[in-house]
Length: 381
Image (cartoon, rainbow, N blue to C red):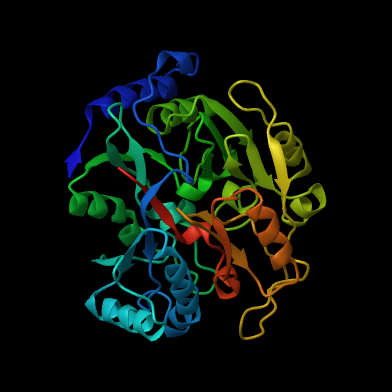
């Protein structure tokens, strides 16, 4: 693992300058793109998963989620490599037993033994980007448990220190350059959407929030995103701080289906999903870096409120937008709902070269996430 810090020193000095003198602004045109994040549908080497364990939230939590991870692996192994992070050797052996029992070949699967706090690798895992020569690097953005949130059940601060180490451990194991951004920005994979053509879409509430990046301005964030993700055009929604644990991640309700298409919902469903009317207007008016309007694919919420596999009614509907694009598959969250088939068919129209597969996420959804939240792509070299 090689830590690269020279560019960071330059960026830090520039950002600090902005913080010290509000009148001094860095022009986005004056900074260079250092790294570019590949769009999710580009070819993968593999997919990373953090398997649920019992060390943080107990056996019932772990056992309720195993089936979702087994289902994801079953579909992914025929598409690409699957890199599974297990808490320890005992958990690795338990997972192997589950996969063997399900008749899943281990030939495209490897395991890394890293202690983790939870399963949300989209937010705390490695972000792969390419340098100017096209080489893949691992970016390690700051992760602080979604703003040092408190667990509703225990009343204790959500632990995040173990998960925050995962990117550096992956870079070390792969002998890959690590771009350490922990002091630059707290940022999670679910906070940002990239269209693969220079446009980034995000909610301010999950980035420009004092519980993550106190004092950071939109202009400063854009400089960082240009340097380290390659974004030059920005679609900013306000979002809602405190709405839920993530302070409204974009990937729950709006995604780039490709460079010209945004996958989202109709206005009524977006309002039901607690997206503000003014943000819906901004979303529907979004333009790419050339000033062209996006095409919109609008996928409904579930028809009914979601119930877990044990019958607990969650009291709210489920989103299908939080899907994951693999090499030959698209994994779509499903809820045992009549609209599962509707959503799967709509999303299939965007990916004619891939097979859409529904993954039951009812128990995962009870804990605040879906498929995109628990997957992380590693692009092909």
